[in-house]
Length: 218
Length: 259
Figure 1 (cartoon, each protein chain N blue to C red):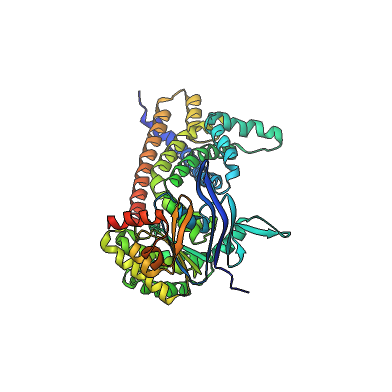
Figure 2 (cartoon, rainbow over the protein chains, first blue to last red; figure 1 turned 120 degrees about the vertical axis):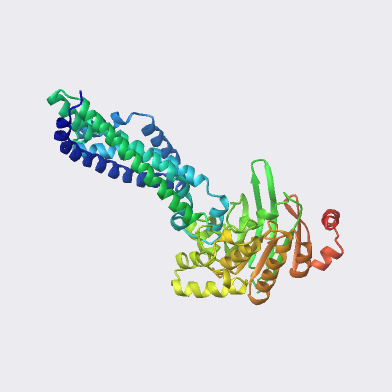
């Protein structure tokens, strides 16, 4: 049933593809976390954008990621925007999760006591300084677990990139399967890899959480 | 030409929907004057401070600071609602101390006191720290400069908040029920700091307070608010000693009865 020789043979190919999966995850998450923060801040700092941003966020959250990936890769070229598969895929993932992250940040901002905003006004701080020095440092630590969940969720969605032939882990496994007609080993390895990486990131997030709590909860 | 008032409320109204919180308020406060605002809850007294600090917008009238409009700005000879740049320029003259302290919990006492001087006034860190050290010394907390708010008592937190507000060198200081959230034994230390501030600094002070004894001893003038209007005002010995208005009498009677 399980062929160890075959397993060792395909391992390097899968390991190579795994690096691309991790790259896609990290770039996608940095994009999601940054863009999400920008959306959440602009929504509060420039009230007249609030409606547009909430419609945009709702639109992105309410349509499947796969469709968004296809849209960026197959439809955008019709408008003259041609992206390679990896860029289109990572961009789609980043934007999709930015919509989720922006809601997390918003919850974080909502939890800041009104007195913190008022003290910032009384000290005549600019909106920029207020966010950078007062609001964001207090809002982030409590939402690290929620952001961490989205990191793991985003990571587990990278196999969607195989739909536009990005050579990530799933695509590599699919190709091995279709060439050898053996799916047991490649799919099992892919599953184990995702399990291992998810556990590692969950542990990292927990220690980050502890670190932040130690720094803020004196 | 008589000297301009430090603060002038000119026919200022504030409404929340159908509820009128302040109704055509006219009030002048002279340079260096110490004014206490007393009155029952819901009388609009805290709103007066919050409007002056621009934490609340106003519905009618104009607020002036040193002869310049705060809520408005001059454009082609008429007054139009102020933009943020104008508001920030004028409100730099005003500082405020809050009932719930509102210190930044992720910053030490020292960091709380240098944040605004560095980012708003553009002071060098060393200069800002030197000034903050002086102010923390004035409020008796030079030993606590590296403590976080959660490591300080309520009275100590409020004293840091006073030092923080002073670090911006305001001309006008607003105190919004600054001792109301404190345990009784901590009230004295905060009032002592305010007394000292009044003696040593050329500040115009406007305070909302429930400490009648302090208002009587400290202020040049006491305003009694009722239902969004100034019901009676005058020097403390007159207002407390021989109130003319029936409502003032009732309020003082009730407050003094309660001890």
